[in-house]
Image 1 (tube, helix red, strand yellow):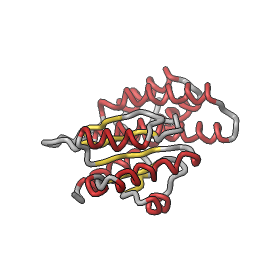
Image 2: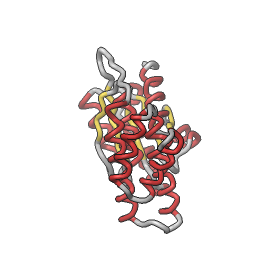
Image 3: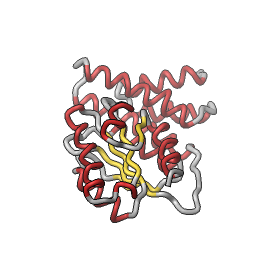
Image 4: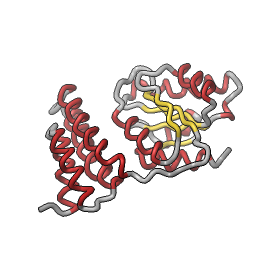
Amino acid sequence: MHDKETVLGDMARAVVDMDEAGAVRLAETSIELGVDAYTGINDGLVKGMNVVGEKYDNEEYFIPELLLCSDAMTAGIEVLRPHLPVKEQAVKEKIVIGVIQGDTHDIGKNLVKIMLETSGFEVIDLGRDVAPRTFVDTAVEVDARLIGLSTLMTTTMGRMEEVIQILEDEGIRDRFRVMVGGEPVSRGFAERIGADAYALNGTEAARTALELVATF
């Protein structure tokens, strides 16, 4: 018999163990137990993926294991997603998001997308390995107010600043709010490159995006 704390721990272990079926079953159990879907994602599935990230950094896991763990987490999230409360807005604000050029790690970005959508945003997801120019052109084309940039690699962080530089060079910087995030990114880095905000995780990204919209 599961209690709420136990099922969260088991969800995390299912991700670490690459157990997709287990992640799905435990996500369903968490709902039956009345665990908040946000809590299930953040304190269960994502916590497990954080352990996976540490194992990858320590060379205990490699790309094949990382992908299988990601599949398990994603499968669990898909069970929980319909139970996330969605905020309805008369007109949805648009945000363009993606992983900056040179980086193909999109697990964090995908979590941010889910949280933004449940907060009422229309998310234009450019995917991974996205050129700075593409962020700007897309934001202009769809008339988005926000741009969200993600990376998990220190070697690609500089590309984020290129997005802001393009906006400034073209005289349209004040039309957009730029938010950055990812494992190596910090609030100090965001300030140094002239970004409007930094977000640590998906939940914070959604809250920050709502705050940025209010600044227009």
